[in-house]
Image 1: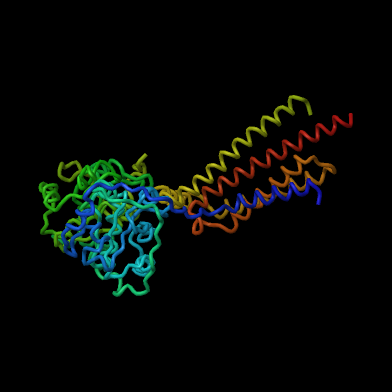
Image 2: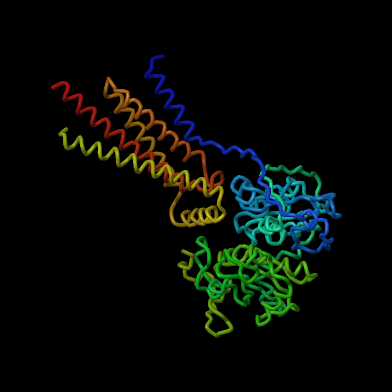
Amino acid sequence: MNKRNLSLLFVLILLVSIFTGCSQEKKESSNAPATEKPAAEEQSQKAEAVDVKKVFVSPEWVKSVIDGNQKESDNYIILEANWGTADESPDYNTGHIPGAVHVDIASIEGEPYWNIKTPEEVEQAMLDLGITKDKTVVLYGADVSGTARVVYAYLWAGVENVKVLNGSLNAWTNAGFELETTANAATPATDFGAKVPVHPEYWTSIEDAAKRLNDDSNFRLVSIRSYKEFIGETSGYSYIDKAGEPKGAVWGKAGSDPYHMEDYIHEDGTYITMDEMKELWKDLDFTLDNHLAFYCGTGWRATIPFLVMYENGYTDMSLYDGGWYQWQMNDDLPVQVGDPNTGDVLYTTVGELPNDKAAK
Amino acid sequence: MTKRQNKVCYICIILCIVLEITAAIGAYAANYYTKTRMGMLRHVVYLNGKWERLVNITELKWLAILISIILIIFVYVLYKKQKKHSMTVKLVTVITTVISLWTVFYLLFYNTGINRAYYILSICFIMITVFQHIICYCLYSIKVKNQFNRRD
């Protein structure tokens, strides 16, 4: 074979390699940067035990679990929740809580409506991470809504003890606890220990939401969306053309846009308490005596008030998972555009809405 | 072929290389971000649905496959018409054929189920194929002209 033919062959191989693509290798772990403060160990030992229903926990409590000072220490897993792989998660690959495993938020939700996946799929996703109903799961993540959504899904599925590290990784490092960069893999489980979902009542379907808006005077469909989304000024999303709300929905506040939750999250990234939520809701069109079905665009933000209520012992609430995304896919469903409280509101159907309200 | 026409060919080649690289970067970015960013995935899924409602995807797909195959045949005929080829012409012909075959393969064997960004990637690959063929034809034109010059 002469030089020219060899060159041609080389180019051919090179092109085939380029077009068939290549998968990314998992990053090797590097040395752990440690940020420790004096007396951090002591603080973790002092952390008090918390109730199984308690959702939002302190970094000291999480550290005490890791150190073996809590009853949960025997059977727990710490998960860093982010959409996508661990390699793409800054909160994982640049340093995570020791022993933490990455969980892809997409493992519990999917197309066509971005709703919670089927019980079988969610169960398998949990088993892959070694999660059973008796295992304590502690989650944290850069996205407060995304993290809350995974927590909600696990509670719906039947995990009895699910926690959120309140304030996420910032709270952890501010408390002086160390990080590691070694990638951890979960040990899969084979039996969840219950039929998923254990709590189907936490989930409201679009059919149920539409029916109860008409038939149930105690039912409130609570929009956890920005005011601009609530009045139909924008859909809030680049992938939703129509703006508005299901007819009869009431506003439950949220934040400045779909990606910020200022009304429910403190500046330090911690979630608001039940008392603060009551204060937030005091002039709104629903009370805690109503059945509250929270919704937002695709079911992320709405899980936050659900978890706050769950933690405080409330049971008469659920998540209308399909949110505005699924609602606006049905031309015949009734909608409202505007604020019913101001009188400046238009009642129509999805099919009559203009298609120019996607977020730019 | 005049010197001016020859110059136009070179400009065309450079322009097509730039556009081809841009399309390749676009394809890589679309593929990468669809797999790593939730917002991008959702937007791509939304676009897929929108395009499926607006145009007949199946017809367009077969039209693109047909055009790619015709382009491959053109390159083959051009190659056969000349008896002697420089290394550059051989190389570009191989690259053009491989790119065209890849586009046909991708259009035939992939779909939005395998890769959500299938439509966007298909558009990018078709663009790359067309630009590559323009480069190839320009190069053949230049060489033909040079050969005539030598004969004169």
